Length: 520
Image (tube, rainbow, N blue to C red; front, side, top):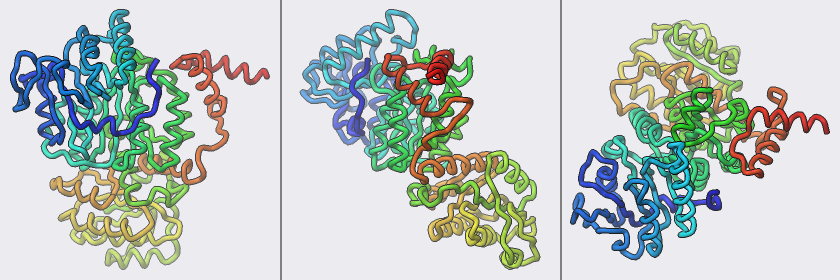
């Protein structure tokens, strides 16, 4: 049993942090926390707790939690699991709001002792009014408020820029090892990154829901192994959609083997993949296939929301245009766009003359358009062709495939200007990229979504289209039938299971529910 749901982001904006079991050894978990807090400019008080040290990283040490000042907002627990209950006893009068438990050895072991200890920790914390993050998690980071409370190598990245993609992840490794590093290398900035581990109390969905109200977050990336509370999950997706914050989800445990791995990782049961997909379609959720999908799709949504363009169209995937100087790239975009369900309208009468003038040689208008390599050396054609396509009545999304430019700054400047001045959406497909990493920062500055490959760009537009078809047309459809199950029936089954205290709806129980409904 978890605490009553409903938190706000102030939980992750502590004014003071105590590190229980703080170490002076920077290779250890608790040896990384204090340096990370200092490196990211934590503005509050830091209290290392270690009876064998007078100071760590220039911060005065305290021999025990009982010796801490009267008020401490957050406690980071890094001792072994056997000391956690005594530590909580010592925090009874300290006003602690959040305890991040990085220790392992709890329910993820699958052993009765670890499961019981995790429950005892959650119960005791609940009695003290303390929310628990973890156990078995890496921590959290609030980049706008300079709080790097995570023992992760990626947090050693110098001067991490604050962005507007909020990440809530059951897996600390995916969040703090891969998503953050890969995202930062491509100019994607994050507002918050929260890992929840075993979820003795706070879970990834509850933390993601708090991100809905965070003014610095424009899109939400969620990494989950299991939906423990189906009703809360549906409520989160509905509220996020209604306030215009798209949700992208990377779900592990979708295969039979993945389910086994998920349970051994955090003790979570992964549930039905088909049912999960059905719910995602209803709420316009983008389902990422892998790590790169997650941060690029989330970044696309964040940049378009930042630019005020998410509410512009109800079916943008049916109104696409694309072009490149490489016929091979044009062919790939045509293929992958078709596979993703996109439509490329035929250019209107008079388009031949427009494009021929733009490239300064005769050109037959098509969509997608092959400008041919004759344009090489004249980088202004990227902007000119984008603007022509954007001017067609039946085009809402333009996808230039950037290749072979003397310098990409000029084309990016042009695309950014067009995206700013026009209602149409510009999404850059950039196979190859640039040697100048500053170009990725230009993409973010201009609110230009970016995908490196044609299949990713096509999938990105399809994800945008799925969100727009739900949330720009009044919300989730009243009825949709997939594989014989209507979504109201699925919702009813989920809510019934939640009422019985179940966190997983099996295929067998879903069939039983369907047979019961059909026999009425």
